[in-house]
Length: 190
Image 1 (cartoon, rainbow, N blue to C red):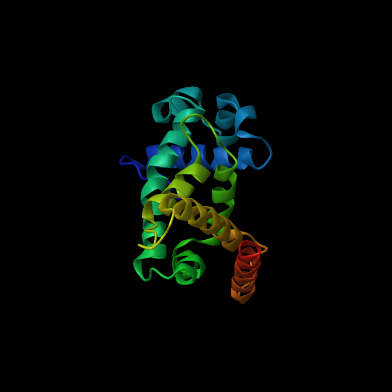
Image 2: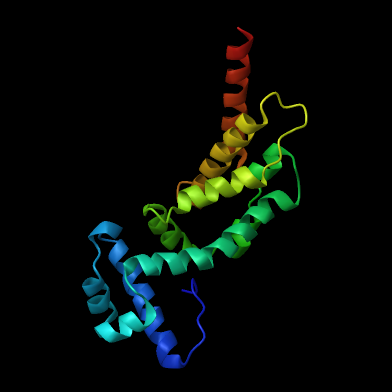
């Protein structure tokens, strides 16, 4: 796991890896609120002073993960928006996910998505990233609403693409979205 890159000797890096691995192992069975520093220390098989050389508390772990996840998230968003401004191309563009999001990171991603604290909310960070990156059409009667709707759809598509339920071919997702758009147009025309 390479969420956080730290400078230091091998022992320092090994302990940091053990702490992060313990943290994610505990997230398999416990919510973030239930996890204690003592559990992390026991699971990582390290002593308390080693933990505190790396982190102040479990919230500090999240803060450092967030700092390292932000560049990855930005790179992912630029991938979505870099090649096209066509809504369908953006929503269904998957090359970054396929090339740069290893299977083992999906588990960590979904574990982190469940954590929401005052200072850590990966769902909001990604959603806000979509909002910020999307440029509404010049003819949009409500640019803010267009940005919000796009961010909602793009976020849901990202979650769907990373889930195990996601089909290899995206034709089904495109058909569903087109069907929803057609139903919306009919409703608005009535």
